[in-house]
Amino acid sequence: MKTSRILIGAMLAATGLLQGLRAQTEPVVQRLEYKEYAPWAGVEGAGCFVQLEMDFLLEGNAAPTETVKEGRSWSECMQGMTQEDRISLLNRGIVNRVLVEKAFGKEYADRSFLMAAACYRDARDAEYRKNVEEMLDVDPDIRIPEYDFYVSGIVVDTGRMFLTYRLEESHYTGGAHPNSSVRYLNFDARGLVTVADLFGEDKLEVLKEVVFKALLSKEGVKTAEELERKSYFPEFFHVSDDFYVKDDSIVFVYSPYEIAAYSQGVVEIPVPFSALEAAGF
Image (cartoon, rainbow, N blue to C red):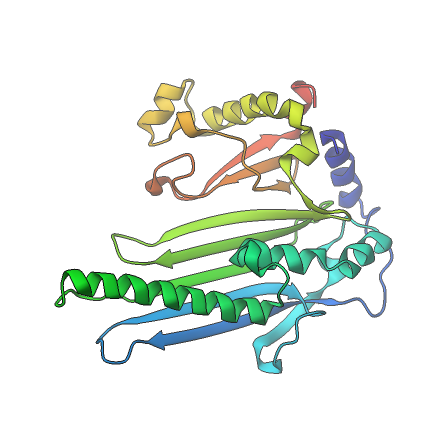
């Protein structure tokens, strides 16, 4: 796929020409929730809390009624696809499988959401107990912190040619503050779309220059040295595979510590379609 496809798709979606047919029995995007707190008996204040809130296609995820909230129709979340493409993507189970893998890890990819959630909870609890035992071995009187793990995922209605999904994760395992990350996953009829898919592997260096210039402009500076003074790490700069299409731009997204200090938070770099066209995309 090339940028021109994004431009054309965005324009068509804006005029409603790519919304396709609406089936009467389309599957629904549902919010599935899972929460569990596991206190450690005998150790005051010790425990591991896991909370998961994610949008999934209900099909293929056997879930108790109370864990499912009313969702939106599949067609509402994939406005830029034809009916045939939406059903093709659904039937192959691509979206749910990718979401499970990205949220919990590759080892969970073939499991349902609730099974993956239970396994993820067990793994985090085992990790917590191992770390606490090591701390108690060093200092039996040490204050034991609670661990908190939070994963959230939601379909983002951009009205563009992709199903765009925002995945957030945060965890606290002691220290000054929690660690967190945010990812954007984009799907078309063939599955997950990467930056290399969109622009071509051989064009990534050119794209890197375009995105870096957009960052300089966003921050109102002209050099990498000036970026450093704003708590950025120019030497670690790269083109993020986390992006979404908005208005007339592609927005590249970076989690804390990825290209800047924690104080910068999540960094979003909008790159106008016009800048991409000028670079030959």
